[in-house]
Every structure is written in structure tokens, then in C-alpha cells.
Length: 161
Image (cartoon, rainbow, N blue to C red; front, side, top):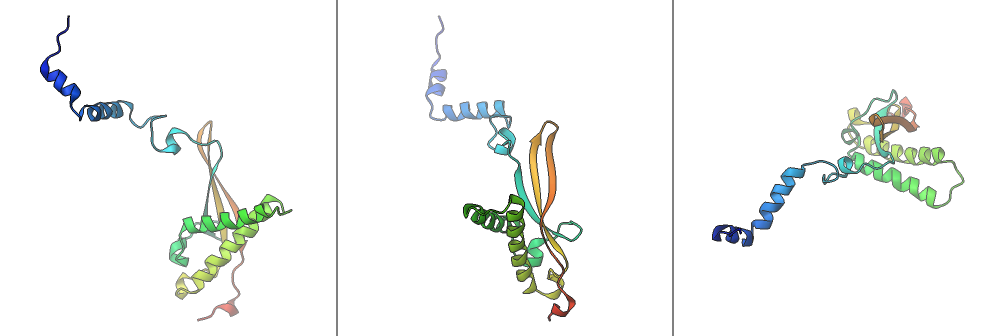
């Protein structure tokens, strides 16, 4: 016969006991699937995650916020809004063309914002919108960089102040 001591009974009834139990369970499970609160680790989606960034004519990333004052997140939202608007309108255009048009809208907005800044921050040369697609494959995460849209360099006569 097991006789419970008064101290053990008191500990089990203490309001902090569930907290101690939770801490122990959390330490035991750690940050492993499926217990991780970060979905990218615990349950990766089979669909690729798409991010967009600004690049020069050769595809080298440009500091978008420095040039235009706009953030990469805002650029991605603007792109998705324009692309989604054309898709919702049942456009007869192929997907690549819809993406190119939406990308050119975004690039034009970024260029306009940059032209309001000091001369050395202006986006006058050729610029591109690049899609970075990250997907989970058999060999781990895979990245794919693909140009979506491009704007040619501004002519010298439009150099302005």
C-alpha cells in the first residue's frame, strides 16, 4: 500500500503544478515536428513560397527601400493585388503575361518613387522584378530565381535635376 505524504499531496494540488507539468513537457518535446510553433519547420506547404525583389539589369539585388522608400513587403502586396485583379477579371492573357504586366506596374511605381529622391538614389538604369520561389523537395529547400518584369533605362534627356 502506497501512502501519499502530505507534502506530495500539497504539491499536486498547488495551482502552479500544471505550469511545472507544461514546462517539463515543452522541454521534452522541443522545437521538433509537429510541436514547433513555426509552420515553416513543422508543416511545410507543398506549394512554393514566392517572394519578389528588385534587381538591376544583370539580376543583382538592389536595396529597394534605400532607392524608393518602399518596403519589399509593400512591393509584394502591390504585385499580388494587381495580378489578382487581372485574374479576377477573367483576363484571357496567359499567366506569364499577367505577371509581367503586374510587375511592370510595380516597377513603374518604384521608379516614380525613386525619382523623387536625391539623384544618386534614383532608379534610372534598367531594373527588373525577380521572383524568388522557395519549395521543399527531396533534397531539401530549393530556390528558383526568375525575372518577372523589366523596365529599360531612362534616356539621358530625362535626367532632370
